[in-house]
Image 1 (cartoon, one colour):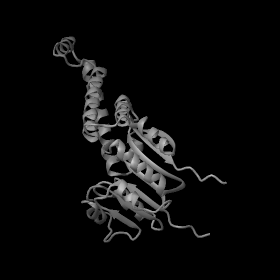
Image 2: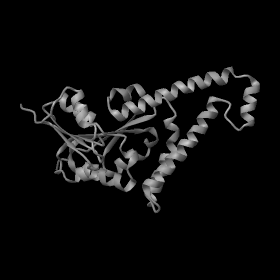
Image 3: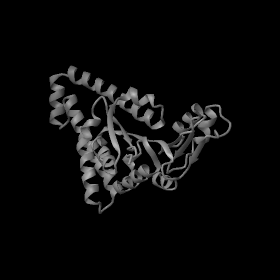
Image 4: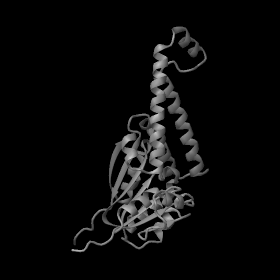
Length: 259
């Protein structure tokens, strides 16, 4: 039996389109599309770094194209797999719903969409995907697993997390070996005197930063659903301050029911 080529779509590919390029070179019998709302300015340079003189025939790059815009242009049940890495943390609630609807329309029954985000989206994004009709599973991962994805965004996030962990260990050592007078002085200055205190301060700062970002994304008059979504995202910030600060969310389109 001759197997047909699979149509695989990457949403929010980043400046190099690295994941789509790597997959296209590794699986020449299948079709890959890399989509990003920004120009893939480093795409050509990355091809050259792989020793490739011209674009693989099984790869299409969609520059300056949003996820919804691309999916809306595709035929119904034409996508065999779709993925996105750290995309939805930049997309408004209303726009996310539009993307989910297009994913449900364009994906073949039984196929999967996989997205990776920071773990503070562990409640909200699966809820939204289930409400669209997907069957959803969730898995928490750490830096080592994220690095295995071999993507630009994954590598950047994983390396940052490993650096933060290293700094926390050094800070813990400093607190443990600090003289009582030093700790007393820090307390007088209103500063943390333990690693737990420092992490609590960092967490609240991160929560405020995320809240300000979502206020800009959602605008001055967000819908009630959008406000509730942001509340859940902020509530789950503590999940980021663990050894598994990212979440892999797999959304499967149900098979068609036999009549």
